[in-house]
Length: 310
Image (tube, rainbow, N blue to C red; front, side, top):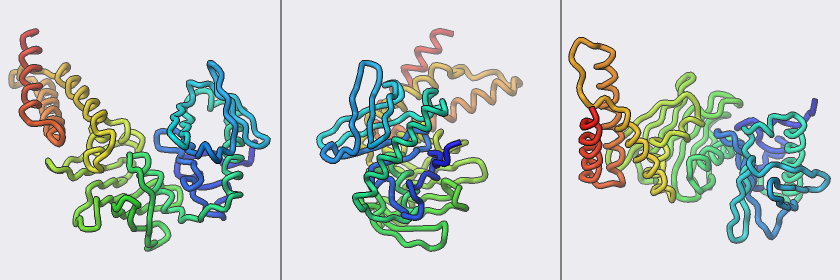
């Protein structure tokens, strides 16, 4: 069995933990709650060679060589740098030999970057960097004050303020509060772990909204949370996240029980009320970027369409 570290979320802090080197500082982001590992690097200072075939990517770093199917990787090319996303949840990575080769590749990449003498970082800052990056905040911890072994607060490079805590080294998060600026009294975004659940609260121009999830990764798969995160941080993907939430609302319309059931059928009435409340909630949320009259028109059109089919 290999004695190399397994790339578990929030535990893969660096090749050598004693160095306390930031993965993000050397170009490694994650593994993220979604299960992906992202490597961002300057094309002027690429520590590896990459050649592509019709179905695979070939990587070479030092003594490490590996061929990975293209379906397991996303490559984004921008002026001056590339971003490679390794989808480590896919079956190819579940093969022990494949995964060991992948670990070797990543560790050789890190070793190369370590040799260039990058700055050291507090592991709690690293946790904040990973989580904020995953939720769409393109900023790193700028300065921080550590209050205890598992508590830290400070500011991000985009001017946002944060408070972060965890209950143990292996705990991904106990609490993360994000403030849009130093002048804000109340957090714009709150993420808290309550037992096995994750509670999220969002303070938007059109009200406060809450959600609850079973895992961090499920937060980022929710069209409601993704949209609210974009609204709260003025995200560049707001248009796309709005479209996804509108599609979610249209799905709610499609499967809604439009005609109120007769009293006495308890489970049917409960379902009707739950569906109605959720539709109203999503419509309220969408007011943050869509005029209310347009949302009401969507509702009226859906009601007329689906009731006419009864």
